[in-house]
Length: 212
Image 1: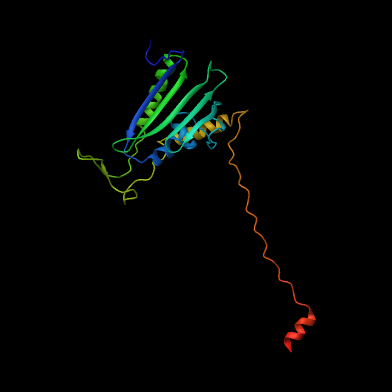
Image 2 (image 1 turned 135 degrees about the horizontal axis):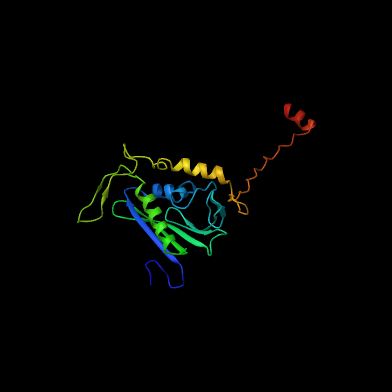
């Protein structure tokens, strides 16, 4: 059996890299809609589990599973694909921080697999993320990390040079795909405040008696 080929047909691919950052920072960079341009495609819609959104190139996306800041699983469909594809992000704990793991299933052939591996490898290796926290690893026990929020720690890195412009240009060129449902947050009913009871005025005769 060829490398990456599964028993039921199709191919799969996976790439992972470790970074000295926290899981929240990694999730913000890869698991939020703004970060999809790094490894899936430009998306201007919010991601919520069960929602259907669209990429700028017309790819239809269903959010199968969303567990921030650990897992994001998406089902991708296009009219010119013979079958749907599934891609997944997992943010795993590692010795120095976290490991960002990307995985794809349902790829049509070995060429698509190699293209996916090459694209994701470039994306992971170009994400120059470091939290600014020193990590000391010893044989005695768990690694010792500086507390979060230490002065000098960096903020979550922005999109790599040219990536934000590329995503914006793609969204402007293609526009939203037709036939997709926009993710809309469920509105919670407003709490209705009860009016304070109105005190009844005493009759004029009773008021007159009180003044005597």
